Structures are given as C-alpha cells and as structure tokens.
Length: 189
Picture 1 (cartoon, rainbow, N blue to C red):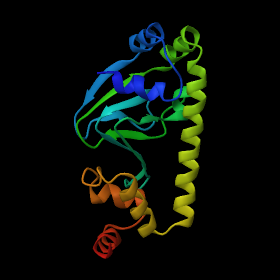
Picture 2 (cartoon, rainbow, N blue to C red; picture 1 turned 30 degrees about the horizontal axis):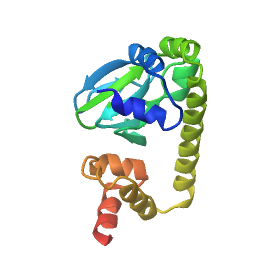
Picture 3 (spheres, rainbow, N blue to C red; picture 1 turned 180 degrees about the horizontal axis):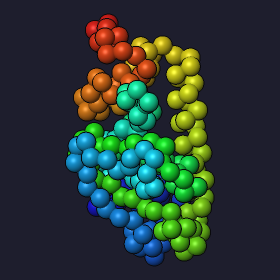
Picture 4 (cartoon, one colour; picture 1 turned 180 degrees about the vertical axis):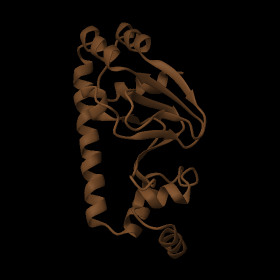
C-alpha cells in the first residue's frame, strides 16, 4: 500500500529497508470520502500529505462566502499548508477531497523525529520545499501573465486524466474565470 510513497521518496534519495521502516511507522493512513475535509481554514490541524489515491482542492473561503481554488492535488503528489505545518500557525486553507481518496499523513512532531532517525530525509525535504516554491511561483506567473484559455489548456495538458474529476465550478475558480467564460473556452477548444 505504501509502495508509491517509497517510490516517490526514492526518486530523489535512496532508502535502506530500515530507513523505510522508520518512515512507514511515522505516517498514518486516512481514507476520505468525496467532499470530506482534511483541513479547515483557521484550524490548528495541519499535515504533510502524500496522496495514494484521489484528488483534492486547496482553497480559501472569501469574506463574501465564495471559494477561491488555489491548487488541485492528485495521486502521487504531496500537499501541505506550508506555513501552518512548519510554523504551527492556524491553517490558511481548506483542503477538501473532490473524490474518494486515500492518503498518508505525517504530523510535525513525527517529521521532526524522522529527521533525527533518517537524516538524509532533510535532503528530500529541501527538494520538496524547492518544488513547492517553484509550483507557487509558476501558479502566480500563470495567473498574472496567461489568459484563462491558456491556463485551461495548460491544466488539461498537465492533467488529462483528471479533467472529468474537477467540476466546472472548481475549475472556473482555479482558472479565475466565470462559469460562462469557462463554458465558452471549452466550446472553442
């Protein structure tokens, strides 16, 4: 069950069976049904997550009650409310399953223990943080410099197998366009 997690880590660093055992003991397996929350905005519950199966949206709830989708996360990807997790601050985002999902989570205390027990995980951690920063920067550049249609085409090129999983309401929020404009984009493609 955890093989995809081990493979994800071993794409960056090698692990002995003993090091892997230490990791496997510190993660917790969780199943979430579609529309269940992993994290609620302004709570004190934050995890670093590896997605075994399923899909998630990371979003904020605006003052007027509307959602702004910041990221989608899919199988074999990592997700985390970075500031909340590492600085133990209230969560910034809601993280909700958009289909039935299975995940592995680790809390801050167990991650700190893992750094002591398997020091080479610090190297993996640095690579993960770099990747997250690049993704955040790219998302910002896309929002600032690309049209809604370009962002849509990028999304379907990157996640062709997930386009049916993400409903139009969530996708239009992520792209920063209205439902009507998304329908127009889809018709023109």
